[in-house]
Length: 425
Picture 1: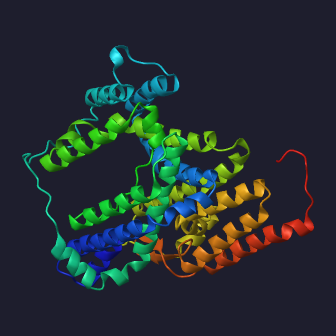
Picture 2: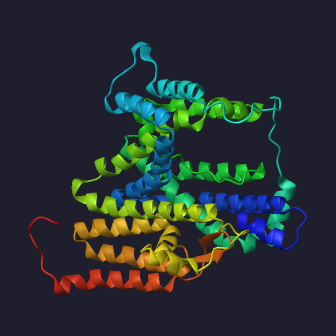
Picture 3: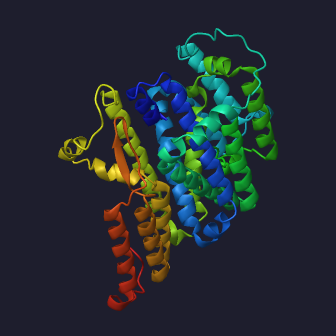
Protein backbone atom coordinates (compact mmCIF):
# COMPACT_ATOMS: atom_id res chain seq x y z
CA UNK A 1 0.00 0.00 0.00
CA UNK A 2 2.86 2.41 0.74
CA UNK A 3 4.48 1.90 -2.70
CA UNK A 4 1.06 2.44 -4.28
CA UNK A 5 0.61 5.68 -2.37
CA UNK A 6 4.11 6.91 -3.21
CA UNK A 7 3.62 6.09 -6.90
CA UNK A 8 0.26 7.86 -6.94
CA UNK A 9 1.76 10.90 -5.24
CA UNK A 10 4.63 11.02 -7.72
CA UNK A 11 2.13 10.78 -10.59
CA UNK A 12 0.16 13.73 -9.21
CA UNK A 13 -2.99 11.76 -8.35
CA UNK A 14 -5.73 13.75 -6.65
CA UNK A 15 -6.24 11.22 -3.82
CA UNK A 16 -3.20 8.93 -3.29
CA UNK A 17 -4.66 7.59 -0.04
CA UNK A 18 -7.70 6.15 -1.80
CA UNK A 19 -5.48 4.55 -4.44
CA UNK A 20 -3.38 2.93 -1.70
CA UNK A 21 -6.56 1.64 -0.06
CA UNK A 22 -7.79 0.17 -3.34
CA UNK A 23 -4.43 -1.54 -3.84
CA UNK A 24 -4.88 -3.09 -0.40
CA UNK A 25 -8.40 -4.26 -1.30
CA UNK A 26 -7.11 -5.96 -4.46
CA UNK A 27 -4.32 -7.65 -2.51
CA UNK A 28 -6.74 -8.84 0.17
CA UNK A 29 -9.27 -10.15 -2.36
CA UNK A 30 -6.58 -11.95 -4.36
CA UNK A 31 -5.14 -13.46 -1.20
CA UNK A 32 -8.59 -14.75 -0.25
CA UNK A 33 -8.97 -16.50 -3.60
CA UNK A 34 -5.59 -18.18 -3.15
CA UNK A 35 -6.41 -19.21 0.42
CA UNK A 36 -9.73 -20.69 -0.68
CA UNK A 37 -8.10 -22.60 -3.55
CA UNK A 38 -5.24 -23.78 -1.34
CA UNK A 39 -7.69 -25.37 1.09
CA UNK A 40 -8.11 -28.31 -1.27
CA UNK A 41 -4.41 -29.17 -1.63
CA UNK A 42 -2.88 -28.06 1.67
CA UNK A 43 -3.44 -31.34 3.52
CA UNK A 44 -1.07 -33.13 1.12
CA UNK A 45 1.66 -30.63 1.94
CA UNK A 46 0.97 -31.03 5.64
CA UNK A 47 1.32 -34.82 5.48
CA UNK A 48 4.57 -34.57 3.52
CA UNK A 49 6.19 -32.08 5.91
CA UNK A 50 7.80 -33.12 9.21
CA UNK A 51 6.18 -31.65 12.29
CA UNK A 52 9.49 -30.10 13.30
CA UNK A 53 9.48 -28.07 10.07
CA UNK A 54 5.91 -26.82 10.53
CA UNK A 55 6.21 -25.95 14.22
CA UNK A 56 9.70 -24.43 14.03
CA UNK A 57 8.58 -22.09 11.26
CA UNK A 58 5.71 -20.98 13.47
CA UNK A 59 8.15 -20.58 16.37
CA UNK A 60 10.38 -18.27 14.34
CA UNK A 61 7.41 -16.00 13.71
CA UNK A 62 6.36 -16.19 17.37
CA UNK A 63 9.83 -15.58 18.76
CA UNK A 64 10.67 -12.71 16.41
CA UNK A 65 7.50 -10.90 15.46
CA UNK A 66 5.58 -11.58 18.68
CA UNK A 67 7.88 -12.14 21.65
CA UNK A 68 10.89 -9.93 20.90
CA UNK A 69 8.83 -6.89 19.94
CA UNK A 70 6.85 -7.07 23.16
CA UNK A 71 10.00 -7.88 25.13
CA UNK A 72 11.42 -4.53 24.03
CA UNK A 73 8.20 -2.85 25.07
CA UNK A 74 8.20 -4.64 28.43
CA UNK A 75 11.67 -3.34 29.22
CA UNK A 76 10.75 0.13 28.01
CA UNK A 77 7.93 0.06 30.62
CA UNK A 78 9.47 -2.27 33.24
CA UNK A 79 7.10 -1.49 36.10
CA UNK A 80 4.11 -2.65 34.09
CA UNK A 81 5.91 -5.19 31.92
CA UNK A 82 7.77 -7.12 34.60
CA UNK A 83 4.97 -7.10 37.18
CA UNK A 84 2.39 -8.49 34.74
CA UNK A 85 4.92 -11.01 33.42
CA UNK A 86 5.46 -12.16 37.01
CA UNK A 87 1.73 -12.78 37.38
CA UNK A 88 1.66 -14.93 34.25
CA UNK A 89 4.72 -16.90 35.29
CA UNK A 90 3.03 -17.72 38.61
CA UNK A 91 -0.18 -18.86 36.98
CA UNK A 92 0.95 -20.60 33.82
CA UNK A 93 4.40 -21.91 34.63
CA UNK A 94 4.05 -22.17 38.40
CA UNK A 95 0.54 -23.65 38.00
CA UNK A 96 -0.87 -21.55 40.83
CA UNK A 97 -4.44 -20.23 40.95
CA UNK A 98 -5.81 -17.02 42.39
CA UNK A 99 -8.38 -17.49 45.10
CA UNK A 100 -11.95 -17.24 43.95
CA UNK A 101 -11.06 -18.69 40.54
CA UNK A 102 -10.15 -15.32 39.05
CA UNK A 103 -8.34 -15.94 35.72
CA UNK A 104 -4.66 -15.08 35.80
CA UNK A 105 -4.85 -13.26 32.45
CA UNK A 106 -7.60 -11.01 33.82
CA UNK A 107 -5.52 -10.28 36.93
CA UNK A 108 -2.51 -9.40 34.77
CA UNK A 109 -4.47 -7.01 32.53
CA UNK A 110 -6.31 -5.39 35.46
CA UNK A 111 -3.11 -4.95 37.46
CA UNK A 112 -1.26 -3.67 34.40
CA UNK A 113 -4.01 -1.14 33.69
CA UNK A 114 -4.00 0.05 37.31
CA UNK A 115 -0.21 0.51 37.33
CA UNK A 116 -0.37 2.25 33.94
CA UNK A 117 -2.87 4.79 35.28
CA UNK A 118 -0.88 5.30 38.48
CA UNK A 119 2.38 5.85 36.59
CA UNK A 120 0.99 8.09 33.85
CA UNK A 121 1.23 5.62 30.98
CA UNK A 122 -2.55 5.72 30.77
CA UNK A 123 -4.78 7.26 29.62
CA UNK A 124 -3.35 7.00 26.11
CA UNK A 125 -3.65 10.37 24.38
CA UNK A 126 -6.73 12.51 24.46
CA UNK A 127 -10.13 11.08 25.30
CA UNK A 128 -12.11 10.15 22.17
CA UNK A 129 -14.06 13.13 20.95
CA UNK A 130 -16.59 11.30 18.80
CA UNK A 131 -19.65 9.65 20.23
CA UNK A 132 -20.24 5.94 20.14
CA UNK A 133 -23.16 4.41 18.33
CA UNK A 134 -24.15 1.78 15.83
CA UNK A 135 -21.57 1.49 13.04
CA UNK A 136 -23.07 -0.73 10.34
CA UNK A 137 -20.53 -2.32 7.99
CA UNK A 138 -21.14 -1.38 4.37
CA UNK A 139 -19.92 -3.22 1.26
CA UNK A 140 -17.50 -1.42 -1.03
CA UNK A 141 -18.22 -3.27 -4.25
CA UNK A 142 -17.76 -0.19 -6.43
CA UNK A 143 -14.21 0.69 -5.35
CA UNK A 144 -13.21 -2.99 -5.31
CA UNK A 145 -14.54 -3.63 -8.84
CA UNK A 146 -12.86 -0.46 -10.11
CA UNK A 147 -9.55 -1.63 -8.64
CA UNK A 148 -9.91 -5.18 -9.98
CA UNK A 149 -10.80 -4.04 -13.50
CA UNK A 150 -7.99 -1.50 -13.62
CA UNK A 151 -4.28 -2.20 -13.77
CA UNK A 152 -3.74 -2.74 -10.03
CA UNK A 153 -4.25 -6.51 -10.11
CA UNK A 154 -1.44 -7.06 -12.60
CA UNK A 155 0.75 -4.32 -11.14
CA UNK A 156 0.77 -5.94 -7.70
CA UNK A 157 0.49 -9.61 -8.67
CA UNK A 158 4.05 -10.12 -7.42
CA UNK A 159 2.83 -9.19 -3.94
CA UNK A 160 -0.60 -10.80 -4.04
CA UNK A 161 0.45 -14.32 -5.07
CA UNK A 162 3.20 -14.80 -2.45
CA UNK A 163 1.05 -13.21 0.26
CA UNK A 164 -1.79 -15.62 -0.45
CA UNK A 165 0.54 -18.63 -0.49
CA UNK A 166 2.20 -17.48 2.74
CA UNK A 167 -1.20 -17.25 4.41
CA UNK A 168 -2.09 -20.78 3.30
CA UNK A 169 1.17 -22.17 4.67
CA UNK A 170 0.89 -20.13 7.87
CA UNK A 171 -2.64 -21.37 8.49
CA UNK A 172 -1.48 -24.93 7.84
CA UNK A 173 1.20 -24.54 10.49
CA UNK A 174 -1.33 -23.23 12.99
CA UNK A 175 -3.54 -26.27 12.36
CA UNK A 176 -0.51 -28.47 13.04
CA UNK A 177 0.20 -26.56 16.26
CA UNK A 178 -3.39 -27.11 17.42
CA UNK A 179 -3.14 -30.82 16.69
CA UNK A 180 0.17 -31.04 18.56
CA UNK A 181 -1.67 -29.51 21.53
CA UNK A 182 -4.30 -32.26 21.34
CA UNK A 183 -6.95 -30.59 19.20
CA UNK A 184 -7.10 -31.87 15.61
CA UNK A 185 -9.08 -29.82 13.10
CA UNK A 186 -9.87 -30.84 9.48
CA UNK A 187 -7.61 -28.96 7.10
CA UNK A 188 -9.86 -28.33 4.10
CA UNK A 189 -12.90 -26.71 5.80
CA UNK A 190 -10.66 -24.77 8.17
CA UNK A 191 -8.66 -23.21 5.34
CA UNK A 192 -11.74 -22.75 3.14
CA UNK A 193 -13.52 -20.77 5.85
CA UNK A 194 -10.37 -18.73 6.30
CA UNK A 195 -10.34 -17.88 2.58
CA UNK A 196 -14.02 -16.94 2.65
CA UNK A 197 -13.33 -14.70 5.65
CA UNK A 198 -10.61 -12.89 3.71
CA UNK A 199 -12.91 -12.40 0.71
CA UNK A 200 -15.62 -11.02 3.02
CA UNK A 201 -13.08 -8.66 4.58
CA UNK A 202 -12.18 -7.24 1.16
CA UNK A 203 -15.85 -6.86 0.16
CA UNK A 204 -16.43 -4.72 3.26
CA UNK A 205 -13.38 -2.50 2.85
CA UNK A 206 -10.64 -4.25 4.84
CA UNK A 207 -7.15 -4.51 3.38
CA UNK A 208 -6.08 -7.22 5.79
CA UNK A 209 -6.37 -10.92 4.90
CA UNK A 210 -7.17 -13.32 7.69
CA UNK A 211 -5.23 -16.37 8.77
CA UNK A 212 -6.00 -19.13 11.24
CA UNK A 213 -5.05 -17.68 14.59
CA UNK A 214 -1.60 -18.32 15.96
CA UNK A 215 -1.11 -19.38 19.57
CA UNK A 216 -3.60 -22.22 20.09
CA UNK A 217 -1.30 -24.02 22.60
CA UNK A 218 -0.93 -20.85 24.64
CA UNK A 219 -4.61 -20.02 24.77
CA UNK A 220 -5.42 -23.62 25.68
CA UNK A 221 -2.84 -23.51 28.48
CA UNK A 222 -4.61 -20.40 29.78
CA UNK A 223 -7.80 -22.43 30.12
CA UNK A 224 -9.48 -21.31 26.90
CA UNK A 225 -11.94 -23.70 25.28
CA UNK A 226 -14.50 -23.43 22.47
CA UNK A 227 -16.43 -20.82 24.45
CA UNK A 228 -13.36 -18.57 24.42
CA UNK A 229 -13.46 -18.34 20.63
CA UNK A 230 -17.20 -17.65 20.68
CA UNK A 231 -16.79 -14.89 23.28
CA UNK A 232 -13.88 -13.46 21.30
CA UNK A 233 -16.09 -13.19 18.22
CA UNK A 234 -18.99 -11.69 20.14
CA UNK A 235 -16.78 -9.15 21.90
CA UNK A 236 -14.94 -8.12 18.71
CA UNK A 237 -18.25 -7.76 16.87
CA UNK A 238 -19.72 -5.54 19.58
CA UNK A 239 -16.60 -3.38 19.71
CA UNK A 240 -16.49 -2.97 15.94
CA UNK A 241 -20.19 -2.25 15.51
CA UNK A 242 -20.49 0.21 18.40
CA UNK A 243 -17.41 2.36 17.79
CA UNK A 244 -16.08 1.76 21.30
CA UNK A 245 -12.60 0.58 20.31
CA UNK A 246 -11.23 4.11 20.67
CA UNK A 247 -12.40 4.23 24.29
CA UNK A 248 -10.81 0.87 25.12
CA UNK A 249 -7.52 1.91 23.49
CA UNK A 250 -7.61 5.15 25.48
CA UNK A 251 -8.27 3.47 28.84
CA UNK A 252 -6.34 0.19 28.53
CA UNK A 253 -2.81 0.68 27.14
CA UNK A 254 -1.05 -2.06 25.23
CA UNK A 255 1.42 -2.37 28.10
CA UNK A 256 -1.34 -3.76 30.34
CA UNK A 257 -1.72 -6.92 28.26
CA UNK A 258 1.59 -7.21 26.44
CA UNK A 259 2.97 -9.83 28.83
CA UNK A 260 0.18 -12.18 27.68
CA UNK A 261 1.36 -11.88 24.07
CA UNK A 262 4.97 -12.33 25.17
CA UNK A 263 3.97 -15.49 27.02
CA UNK A 264 2.05 -16.80 23.99
CA UNK A 265 5.20 -16.47 21.90
CA UNK A 266 7.18 -18.35 24.54
CA UNK A 267 4.65 -21.21 24.60
CA UNK A 268 4.61 -21.51 20.80
CA UNK A 269 8.40 -21.69 20.71
CA UNK A 270 8.53 -24.21 23.53
CA UNK A 271 5.95 -26.41 21.80
CA UNK A 272 8.20 -26.80 18.76
CA UNK A 273 10.69 -28.63 21.01
CA UNK A 274 8.18 -30.45 23.22
CA UNK A 275 5.93 -31.85 20.46
CA UNK A 276 8.72 -33.13 18.20
CA UNK A 277 11.15 -36.01 18.71
CA UNK A 278 14.13 -35.05 20.84
CA UNK A 279 16.59 -35.90 18.07
CA UNK A 280 14.89 -33.33 15.81
CA UNK A 281 15.84 -30.43 18.10
CA UNK A 282 18.62 -29.18 15.75
CA UNK A 283 16.07 -29.02 12.91
CA UNK A 284 13.78 -26.96 15.11
CA UNK A 285 16.57 -24.47 15.81
CA UNK A 286 17.40 -24.20 12.10
CA UNK A 287 13.71 -23.62 11.37
CA UNK A 288 13.49 -20.84 13.95
CA UNK A 289 16.46 -18.85 12.65
CA UNK A 290 14.96 -17.46 9.40
CA UNK A 291 11.97 -15.99 11.25
CA UNK A 292 14.20 -14.29 13.79
CA UNK A 293 16.44 -13.10 10.95
CA UNK A 294 13.46 -11.65 9.08
CA UNK A 295 12.42 -9.80 12.21
CA UNK A 296 15.96 -8.42 12.44
CA UNK A 297 15.73 -7.16 8.86
CA UNK A 298 12.49 -5.41 9.75
CA UNK A 299 14.18 -3.78 12.75
CA UNK A 300 17.07 -2.62 10.56
CA UNK A 301 14.64 -0.98 8.12
CA UNK A 302 12.72 0.62 10.98
CA UNK A 303 16.01 2.10 12.18
CA UNK A 304 16.77 3.43 8.71
CA UNK A 305 13.36 5.08 8.49
CA UNK A 306 13.84 6.63 11.93
CA UNK A 307 17.11 8.06 10.61
CA UNK A 308 15.39 9.65 7.61
CA UNK A 309 15.61 6.91 4.98
CA UNK A 310 11.86 6.97 4.47
CA UNK A 311 11.33 7.54 0.76
CA UNK A 312 10.78 11.23 1.27
CA UNK A 313 13.84 12.66 3.03
CA UNK A 314 16.12 9.96 1.63
CA UNK A 315 15.59 6.78 -0.38
CA UNK A 316 16.57 3.20 0.33
CA UNK A 317 19.13 2.04 -2.20
CA UNK A 318 21.90 -0.54 -2.74
CA UNK A 319 24.35 2.12 -1.57
CA UNK A 320 23.36 1.17 2.01
CA UNK A 321 24.80 -2.34 1.65
CA UNK A 322 28.55 -1.47 1.82
CA UNK A 323 27.86 0.90 4.72
CA UNK A 324 26.35 -1.95 6.72
CA UNK A 325 29.09 -4.35 5.63
CA UNK A 326 31.78 -2.04 7.02
CA UNK A 327 30.14 -2.68 10.39
CA UNK A 328 30.16 -6.43 9.62
CA UNK A 329 26.39 -6.46 9.13
CA UNK A 330 25.51 -8.31 5.93
CA UNK A 331 22.26 -6.53 5.39
CA UNK A 332 21.82 -7.79 1.83
CA UNK A 333 21.65 -11.31 3.25
CA UNK A 334 19.06 -10.15 5.80
CA UNK A 335 16.89 -8.58 3.09
CA UNK A 336 17.13 -11.74 0.97
CA UNK A 337 16.29 -13.93 3.96
CA UNK A 338 13.29 -11.78 4.81
CA UNK A 339 11.52 -12.56 1.53
CA UNK A 340 9.69 -15.87 1.75
CA UNK A 341 11.27 -16.74 5.09
CA UNK A 342 8.32 -19.02 5.92
CA UNK A 343 9.33 -21.28 3.05
CA UNK A 344 13.01 -20.98 3.94
CA UNK A 345 12.31 -22.09 7.50
CA UNK A 346 10.16 -25.01 6.44
CA UNK A 347 12.49 -26.30 3.72
CA UNK A 348 15.68 -26.06 5.77
CA UNK A 349 14.09 -27.65 8.84
CA UNK A 350 12.53 -30.43 6.75
CA UNK A 351 15.86 -31.12 5.03
CA UNK A 352 17.57 -31.23 8.42
CA UNK A 353 15.03 -33.75 9.75
CA UNK A 354 15.64 -35.90 6.67
CA UNK A 355 19.41 -35.74 7.23
CA UNK A 356 19.02 -36.64 10.90
CA UNK A 357 16.97 -39.67 9.85
CA UNK A 358 19.51 -40.36 7.05
CA UNK A 359 16.83 -40.02 4.38
CA UNK A 360 19.19 -38.15 2.11
CA UNK A 361 17.02 -38.38 -0.99
CA UNK A 362 14.22 -36.64 0.91
CA UNK A 363 16.68 -33.98 2.07
CA UNK A 364 17.75 -33.40 -1.53
CA UNK A 365 14.16 -32.99 -2.69
CA UNK A 366 13.51 -30.33 -0.04
CA UNK A 367 16.56 -28.45 -1.33
CA UNK A 368 15.36 -28.76 -4.90
CA UNK A 369 11.99 -27.36 -3.77
CA UNK A 370 13.88 -24.37 -2.36
CA UNK A 371 15.65 -23.97 -5.71
CA UNK A 372 12.32 -24.12 -7.57
CA UNK A 373 10.64 -21.49 -5.41
CA UNK A 374 13.73 -19.28 -5.63
CA UNK A 375 13.54 -19.58 -9.43
CA UNK A 376 9.87 -18.51 -9.29
CA UNK A 377 10.76 -15.54 -7.09
CA UNK A 378 8.84 -16.73 -4.04
CA UNK A 379 12.00 -16.79 -1.93
CA UNK A 380 14.93 -14.39 -1.51
CA UNK A 381 14.11 -12.21 -4.52
CA UNK A 382 13.64 -8.55 -3.71
CA UNK A 383 13.72 -5.10 -5.26
CA UNK A 384 14.52 -1.72 -3.77
CA UNK A 385 11.74 0.83 -3.38
CA UNK A 386 12.16 4.35 -1.97
CA UNK A 387 11.14 3.24 1.54
CA UNK A 388 11.58 -0.54 1.63
CA UNK A 389 12.79 -3.75 0.06
CA UNK A 390 9.90 -5.81 -1.25
CA UNK A 391 9.37 -9.24 -2.76
CA UNK A 392 9.91 -9.51 -6.50
CA UNK A 393 8.69 -12.45 -8.58
CA UNK A 394 11.98 -12.58 -10.48
CA UNK A 395 14.41 -15.48 -10.19
CA UNK A 396 16.93 -15.30 -7.32
CA UNK A 397 19.62 -17.12 -9.30
CA UNK A 398 22.33 -17.30 -6.61
CA UNK A 399 19.85 -19.07 -4.33
CA UNK A 400 18.65 -21.33 -7.12
CA UNK A 401 22.26 -22.45 -7.54
CA UNK A 402 22.86 -22.68 -3.81
CA UNK A 403 19.84 -24.85 -3.03
CA UNK A 404 20.44 -27.04 -6.09
CA UNK A 405 24.08 -27.67 -5.16
CA UNK A 406 23.06 -28.31 -1.56
CA UNK A 407 20.67 -30.97 -2.84
CA UNK A 408 23.46 -32.52 -4.92
CA UNK A 409 25.61 -32.72 -1.79
CA UNK A 410 22.95 -34.89 -0.15
CA UNK A 411 22.55 -37.03 -3.26
CA UNK A 412 26.30 -37.66 -3.54
CA UNK A 413 26.80 -38.17 0.20
CA UNK A 414 26.12 -41.96 0.21
CA UNK A 415 28.98 -42.40 -2.28
CA UNK A 416 31.59 -40.52 -0.28
CA UNK A 417 30.59 -41.10 3.35
CA UNK A 418 30.27 -44.01 5.75
CA UNK A 419 27.76 -44.39 8.52
CA UNK A 420 28.87 -43.54 12.04
CA UNK A 421 27.21 -45.32 14.91
CA UNK A 422 28.43 -42.81 17.47
CA UNK A 423 26.33 -39.98 18.92
CA UNK A 424 25.44 -37.11 16.60
CA UNK A 425 27.11 -33.78 17.22
